[in-house]
Amino acid sequence: MAGVSMKDIKLRIRSMESTKQITKAMEMVAASKLRRAQERVTHSRPYFETLYDTLRTIAEKTEDFDSPYLAERGGGKVCYVVIAGDRGLAGGYNNNVLKMAYAEIAGKDACVLPIGKRSVEFFRHRGVPILTEAYAEAADISISDCFSASKLLCKAFLNEEFDDIFVVYTTFVSILSQTPTLRKILPLPRTGKEKTGDPTCLTLYEPSSFEVFDAIIPEYLGGVIYGALCESVASEQGARRTAMDAATKNAEEMIGDLSLKYNRARQGAITQEITEIVAGGES
Amino acid sequence: MTFHLEIVTPDGVSFDGQAESLYVRTQQGDIGILPNHIDYLAALGMGQARVTVDGQTRTAACIGGMVSVSAGEVKLVATTFEWAEDIDVPRAKAAEARARRVIEEKKLTEEELRLAEARLKRALVRQSVGRR
Image (cartoon, rainbow over all chains, first blue to last red; front, side, top):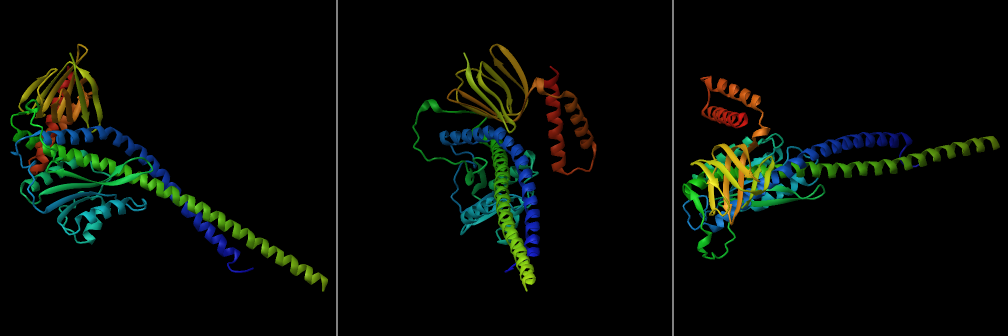
């Protein structure tokens, strides 16, 4: 019998089988977590979108720049909130979003607020200044954590520690597709369209635009971070489910190949034995 | 006459449809919004909100966020928005008692005190709205 012995093949089949069991179990866990995360995304998405759109419309319409949250300072210091997962084995999920953030950061005077263990490790390893490591566990961050993070960011923003804030996260498009996304959150993004000068579109702020923005922006920031987090968590589970599904399929394929080899080797051994017996009888 | 009202919270859409009036508590006090309101933006405080739909008024606990009117579209983006009938009053009472106990402990950091006070306020608002 040529090459590998039957025993070797049998051992390999057994190890493939246990790998398959693990990936299968991980896929099931990811699928059930995905269902919950998906529900959370569909619930939080209207809030997230309305908040973002309303604030942007208002920023576009406003004529005065009383609020520091609206004015472009034009400085070069940037802060990125980068949301990734806590664990690996999720296909390209962590890698895609971190690579995108790193490419953005390159060559800039930037600091990051990483959310998720992988994100923290990635930026620590590359020596990017980290604002705080308090949000290392992406899985159990609640909305109140998002608001405390937003307070921290607002305070630093008003102290002019940085001039722009971006959030980098993964949009949950569908179970099969997730895209890393970069969104500017502060100062409020404006499309730079020409003002129409229509006097009817004046907005009443109570008590003043400055105070309204002062009260709303921290909420807005917290809401946007929470929304991005929900999207990211769902994306992570989706990516993990797809990756584990592929791994299980590959394991099945390999087990099939190996079984074929094993049977061939077994048959070869039997044929050889028969030939030997026949040859022995004839002599 | 009605206007389009959308109420969203991080937990989902609480209301999306035509309403006749909306009363909410902003940080400056209660305001009422009727159809054809001027474009408007204010930050929400903590208190009761009233929405009138088809002549029927529903009340809710409404905490944090903002209310905006833009070209006749009213958007209430709240951190918490619970219809009175959905409020669990015993739970809010328990939360009140818990928050009061925490505040009575003397050794609290500023952050902990602030959180406990916010919890207490939320519990009180829920109770006052839920009882009616």
